[in-house]
Image (cartoon, rainbow over all chains, first blue to last red; front, side, top):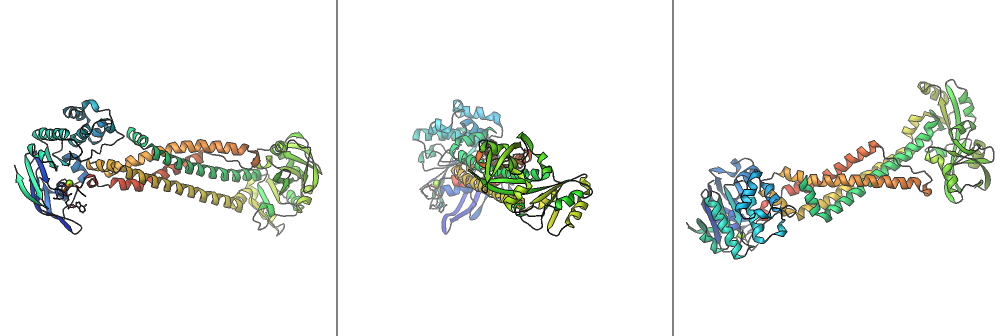
Length: 210
Length: 359
Ligand SMILES: Nc1ncnc2c1ncn2[C@@H]1O[C@H](COP(=O)(O)OP(=O)(O)OP(=O)(O)O)[C@@H](O)[C@H]1O
Ligand SMILES: [Mg+2]
């Protein structure tokens, strides 16, 4: 799915935090949004991922505006995956049940857990595995329905650098297989893995590296 | 169904609180309905045993205040279609050590409705005791009523709890004790179909009396209406308390589990799915609470029935109809109490899961 954002402006109350942002996300690409704290990464990511309506400007998904996409739950379920800084795994469900909750096709769960290296942890609860393993389970949950694009805000914010690099590896691997990733991060190391790096500064796109 | 149970187990403490508050509300509804229904049906049964028509003083609020002329029963008994007219005095007096006991003065033709267990029916200066009060008073040979001593002539058994805890004496003695001729007449007919005509005839006998069929007497009897209305009001309050308890606990539960519902929204589960999920959680609690409340209520009623203190006056019965009614009430309570917090949960914006750096 191709995502095109044009002329995004956003206000929180009277404070203008986005000041005319144009972004194009190509299908299957791994895009990193980097920049100083407060530069507007999370705001852009939220708008691109349908969670936030921009004050001004438009976002098109394969040429269609959000209000032309029909049922938003259905659109998210089939096209978009989310990974947050915190894993938000449901604590009373096992890792496998957490993934199953999202799955449209249950036969895909075990192979996916295998390719993320958590196949042996299916029966464990989130407080019985490591932080890196938790985040892998959360990534599996985001990937289970083969979304066109996965949005992640600071997905490695709670991980040590070794686990963080592991997560970037995974994103790169899956993006080669066709899933797009849009990742907002403080971490400059993500630049080594992404196809496109969008650098934000004070609510505008300062630079785009490919 | 696995998931709601897991969720309930995980949130054990709050689940337990919801469960307890629901059980208490449901048990309160059971008990108040059963006890009030029991009182009404027991008194109705007493009136119905040998009365198709009941005659009282005109315009009184309670049969205890009724005072009618005993001799009228003779004229009534002579009427065509009347099988029998018995007179009754309803009174209450302390019998040491009991603070208050029901005293029934009965015309002799009514004695046969008391099943004699031992001794004989009372003559002048004698009383017979209900089996329950006979035990409570430790099998006395005489009792003192208003400073007069009465010999216990016999003991009877009645399936009506009131009477089993009461004292029966002849009409003349009771009349002297309570300074009245008679409280009520109970009239049995040859043919119930003729009751309307006979009621009219009786009413034309004297302007001081009022005859009604027992059915319509029970329907219009103020004391029953008061009992029923207060039980309905208390029941409704227990229901509201139950709902409020669920609403406040479920709001806390939803707040604790914000992340869970936000994630569900982000993976595309619909609002309805989330609402149904929460409703099924409280429904499970409601069904368990119902079962426990039913068991507890049956136990409490059993205890009350056999408690000497109440002398069989309180006799609650949980009928199948009451069980079904309260079950529906319990489910409704759970659904209403959960709906608002569930709708709130279903609208949690996944945006709230995104960490705004620095903010
Ligand atoms: N809900 C909000 N209400 C008011 N102001 C907000 C809100 N969210 C963000 N902001 C402000 O908007 C600006 C951009 O915030 P944003 O979260 O997009 O930055 P960011 O680049 O993601 O920062 P970080 O790297 O710290 O996560 C900041 O100045 C921030 O204080
Ligand atoms: Mg941010």
